[in-house]
Length: 388
Image (cartoon, rainbow, N blue to C red):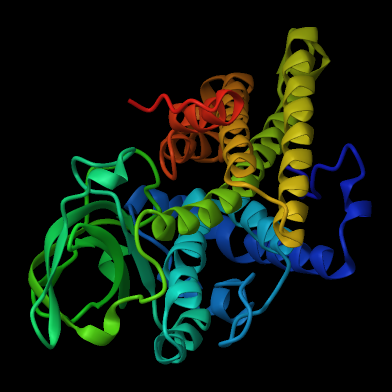
């Protein structure tokens, strides 16, 4: 297979800064050299490549779009391009970076005290402290306002009781940003891995995101010091602002997975001979490849404009919902179509398409399901919430 050199049908590189192109190309080369040779093995074994974390930190990819505290302070477009290239490698790699930066570092950076920022963020930016985000519960996914994890003021400390589920990085995290109700109001707390009453068992049996660690978080009279409350936010605004940052990264990452599948399908179709010529020479296959190119290009335009609006402060959550929903939807369709072009070979891990297809089934669901994002947009169109 020829080396991947990007998909840029509409010459979008001309709209990127030199720094953005440099960062993208750095991560693209790193994915080629360090991720692609090992990721299928980790997927088979159901393990996350922890050996890559230090390198990810050294490149400045953790909390890349945050300012100060050892963070790189890149543009949101640069961060999006990072997510694109990482997910071209594997959704699990992008998920690790997404969770660390957008879901664990961001709430401390945005809502924490100066002492909390100084204590956690430099180590997290360097990959020396790993983080996770605890919002989803066994019975409360799309309706996070119903969460039942509780925090009680016990004088010098808070005591947490409850459980979280589907937590990326949970069992390897040094720090968990956990959302719980305190006096009926959702608040954010920083829980450390050695806090008494806190455990993070690994979830097994996944057919998707196999090269990613997924855990439960369990709190049984988990006692944490008072100075671990994030003081600057209350209610769902806190976790939703984190989720919007993560969804933004996903809208770029999904295009990376789609690019990987498109590249593999294109190269395979040119080398696979049937009825005495490459299958790339048949109309049905060309129609599929043209559709993939069309949808990747539209997704790139959505993601880029989303990033520019995020950088200039004009973005609204509905913009991010549209980009996340559309780009994951078309990426999943592209993965399935690429599997079809590969025929029986498409199920082999010699090719990346089946792994991306399985991963994207999870990405389609997490950080707001496809249907929930449709309802978010429907509320914007009509002014009427239809979630219940």
